[in-house]
Image (cartoon, rainbow, N blue to C red; front, side, top):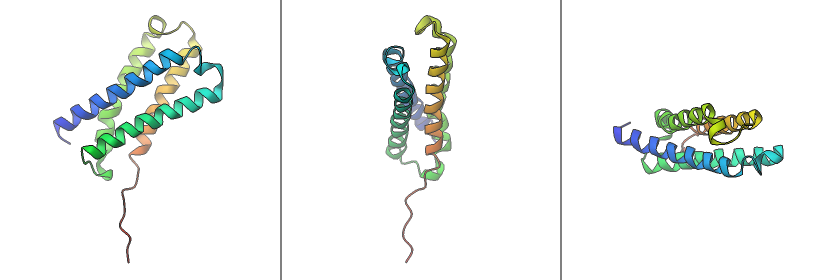
Length: 129
């Protein structure tokens, strides 16, 4: 993995985290936290979108499926660090509700699990005749 790949994956991960956090900040307290199923659906939707961004970035950078561990780490690091910074300053940034804090933390964990699970994707295998 080159230095340019690290920059690209870190930047893409930062954008994915920012988009997920802004989505949660805009709709978390008023809409997402009203019903569990709606919250879960949106958490998995955000994870799917972040995973899609990771996979597209990996394919554009021509990273083989078996070598996506370090790109996934570079992609997930800004999500982890950014999520931690928001959790530490959650009362000033979003809400005073400790339940909302836990739900945001779970939202970020679901993002990271989705990205981590995607590195186990099996590459396209040629049919053996």
